[in-house]
Image (cartoon, rainbow over the protein chains, first blue to last red):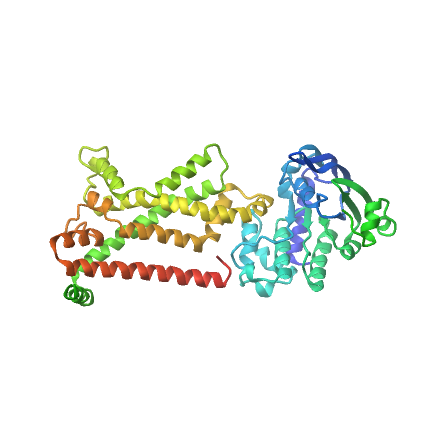
Length: 251
Length: 232
């Protein structure tokens, strides 16, 4: 185990002594913009470990759900409970990786340094973090000249630098080539194996099958199905998910 | 005209000491004012850029309006404060380079604040969600925005410097255009033109233009280097 990862595990252990932020309980979540309800009564529970894939057609509210869970937005109605905490109180114990990474106009290394310093972490971990995502050889290069896959790996390293207990991924591999997709899945899987709770939004069916411990399928602003992966993929219960898995168009 | 131009070039090339003194004082006053205006204007621009508060729209209107402050009005206001009977008269600053620096700082700080506000607000719209996810404090956000916009802000500083070094109204009122003490390029050009000494006026005009071109070229080349690294 690398130094950075050992440190991360140590911090996770320290985090466990604080009041835990898992399991997650979501009750009757509603998000309205004007008269339109994007999320319309979403309820589900997540356990303390594993990787939950959040799936559903465009406009089903997946990305907004992540932002609500991360405390970046307020729901119109409903309740989000991370352990005994409200979402806005635990943002700092979580990390969100966006579909399009927002990288600072600095070098690759400086992007990590910035987060380590801002969050009061040990700056000596930077090289190990870059090594972990395979970017050590690009440390001095401008971050915004990285390829799409490299940029997303840097965004992952930056997320891991905050020692998150929960990591949200919002279609992090959309528009990446297969090698980059696998590299990112490897990093995410390793984080999960170290105890980081993963919530992963994707449209990629293969990716879901590779990564999922359980699946939350959103349709028309509601949870159409929440099943363990072993049940969901062979035999989805709801019609929309069945259609989606069979390659049909779900609207 | 041609004769005056030849004389002017001769003065520039011979390194005339009076001319050099005027040029150096001009640069000292305007560069100092630019640095002070940046120290005042950049944090204000950044705070307004990321802040959401009541009356923000009014603040924006006032900031933008202050960019058009007439130099003579600024000069007059500073004069009223620094003159013997004014509230700051005891400092004895009237007709010194310090008074000129104060006037130019007041003149260009709003320019720096208003232009940097726009630059930083655009950058913040890109970074805001990521920064909220990282739970950065307001101060950390301001620092990061100022650093990441550094090359765009160079152009903002340049706009301020350009305004300062070229203005005549404020410095002539609070500086008095005293030879060997407060005479700068613009006040000297005004004086020499009115005296009919077109050669010296033209020589100063040429230098002023060359400085403007040189500073712009330097900033442009820094920005192009930064753009190649995608730092802009």
